[in-house]
Length: 325
Image 1: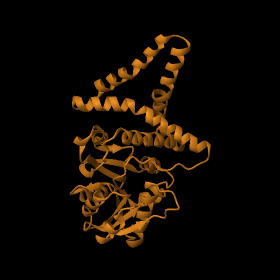
Image 2 (image 1 turned 135 degrees about the vertical axis):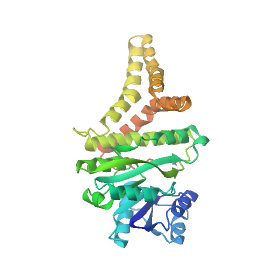
Image 3 (image 1 turned 90 degrees about the vertical axis):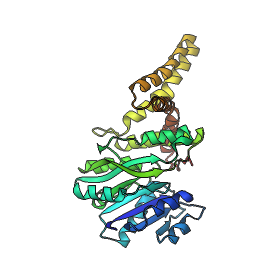
Image 4 (image 1 turned 60 degrees about the vertical axis):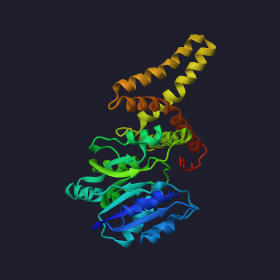
C-alpha cells in the first residue's frame, strides 16, 4: 500500500463506471475519497459500501469539477495530514494496473515535478467516431509538458502552494492550475505509461458539439485569466475559434451578398484547411482524416462557447456546467 498517496474521485451519475473506478484503487493507497456532485443514482452508497469516504457537495453552490477536487483533497488531508501525493481521477475512468506505483516512484525521484500523468485510453473507441477522437486527443508524447488533464497525480506541497484548483471554473481548470504551478517554478510531466481507461460514452453529434463548446468556453476564460505575456494562455486557441468559427463565414456571407456571389468561394478554405491538417498529421490515414475534419468543424462550437463566456461576463453572471453526458 502507498501510505503517502490518496486518491480523489469525482463524479455525477456515473453508475457502473464509478464502480469500476473505485474497485481499481481501493486497497492500494492510504485513503480513497469520492466527491459527488448531485447524483440521483446510488453513487454515494456504492462508494460507502466499498469503505470509501464519500462526500455529497452542497447543491446550493454551483457544481464544478474544480470545486469537487478541492473538497476531496481537503477531506483526504484531514484524514491523513502526512500525505505527500494526491491522485485525482474522474469517476468515468478506471485506473490502470501499476499506474499508482509508477507515478509515485517518478514523483519521489523528481522533486521539481508537481504533477505527473500518463496515457489515458478510451475504453470503447470503436463504438463511435467521437469516442475515437477522444482516444486520439489523449495521445500525448511523453516528457515535460505545459498542462495536465483531470487524471493526474499531484504533489501536495505544490498544490497547497498555489491554493488548489479555482472553484469557479466550469472547464479548463487543470491547465489553469498548471499555469500557476509553472509560474512558481514547478514542472508538469507526461509519463510513458498507461494511466486510466476512460468511458466517454459519446455516440451522438450533439454530445461532441457540447464537449467542443465547453472547450471554447475554457479557451475564453483561460485567455481572460492568463492571456497576457509571457504566458499567453489559450490566446491562440481563442483567436483560431473566432477566425474560423465566426469571422470567416460572416465575411463570406457579407461579401457574397453585398458585393459578388463569387465570394462564396471563400468557403473552400474549410476543405483546404482539412486537407492541410491531413497532410501534416501523423498516424493512420483514417485517424488523420478524423482529426482533420473534426478539428476544423470544432471551431463552430468553440466560438459558441466563447460567446457564452462573453455573455455571462457582460451580464456579470456565473455560467453553469456544459455537460455532454
